Length: 289
Image (cartoon, rainbow, N blue to C red):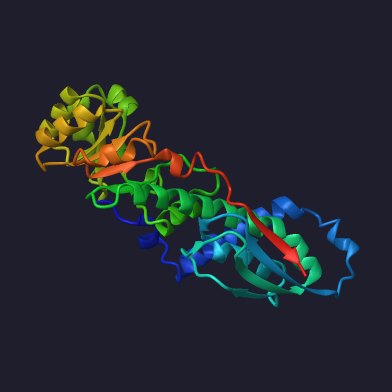
């Protein structure tokens, strides 16, 4: 089965996780502030301020570490007190954290901090909705590589916070033989043989588009198969044909209206690009007191 690959590679308290957050925040701050925050310069340089971040809608909170880093990269003395924990369900008008420090720092870091928190909370919230929709089945909800450029790992982290699982993190993290790979290799059997010969010490998955290709993949020794845009009836047939010989994953045009029915076919996993691609930022607000 799938696993939260992000948390295997980047445990939240690890140096690798901290380095990831620092790097992403540094890019975001440089993009936003550039040569200097001209508007924040209207405030006296030594002025102190207090602020709160408040929710404007229900959500699953995700991205606290990114928020902390946004303020601390500008001023390590900024004090942040969280009133919620990562992964908590939050409600409308709930205070998420209290911030105190240099007023210019609070003003300059505000937008980047909110951007991270709003985006990652959106992914976690969307993921939890899908996870809840298939509760009671054996199926897992997975993300895809359809992520925002530069935020791949952050979004995959958010999926795990929402209760989902990660497909591969990136091209280096597993072999997924898709239709173009098969076409370039010649056929399913050849593509599978080449993947096995690589001996890359990683998982090998192959995508099929119909039941005939499914049987070809099984004959070639596939133990993980992606069913691309299969009908519900063909998914049920695929489960019977595979009979446990391969892990089956459904993908393509999955929605909240269809995800439960897909899970009930007996499929092992469902990968959903909309978890990270079709998201709307959670409405949050920072207010200086």
